[in-house]
Image (cartoon, rainbow, N blue to C red; front, side, top):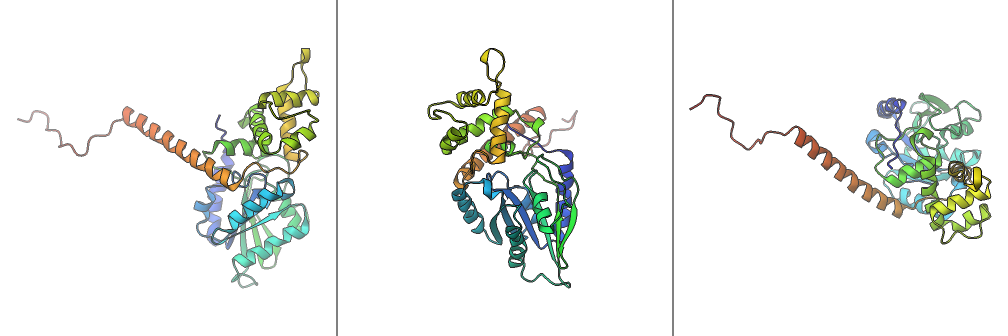
Length: 320
């Protein structure tokens, strides 16, 4: 199943970013440190052109520190790009954003040339929490739900530092299947856009391979090795009392338990992808997308054939 979610207000956000970025000095993209590749918006490079970029791996306190280091190195190797890890609720690390922006745009600063920064990110990545930390208040709305912020906001962090906050935005078509599942597992996609049991099974598949000990300890299981994803979900449901009549497991409830434990960090510090894994997923997704487009064009050509431009023009009706 391909997971897709692009509500109408995201079209407006896309247009707002394209217009606003003309006057912006630095673009901050807030990423989820547990899925740094999947939470990076592939549209952003086209929308922001060659503006200097700061990649912020938010929620790093929930992520695997070894994998976070890999991702920071991956992004810091890019030109005109800096990357830092952050826990948006901590004031001191949050202030690092201002210093990083000045490093990327050293010619900006002072009342004559104030720093102008645009902050973007997927839904529920923690932008509003971060902004509230920066300004020391609760100006931006927050919540554990995708799509809380709906309008662009300008926030003054200092007399010469302006920050434009945009609503969370995904992209019209998610071509990397694993990214869709990881985004859904993280809470970045609206609940009505995916099947929770299916997403939980995909999440458990990743956890079995890389974090089996954490799963075993958290759910007090005798073993994880040798269990299929389906059997593992059933075992978790039984341990947590998610039962229906006649001892059957409520798989919907079990799936909600697994995702909530992951989102809250109760399972432990987990990152669902490495730069190498994500690159492989993207390559496979681009190949499938190219095949899909080729089939679509073939169907359109069959339905509405184009005239052969190389053929001589047909003789007029009645010509000798």
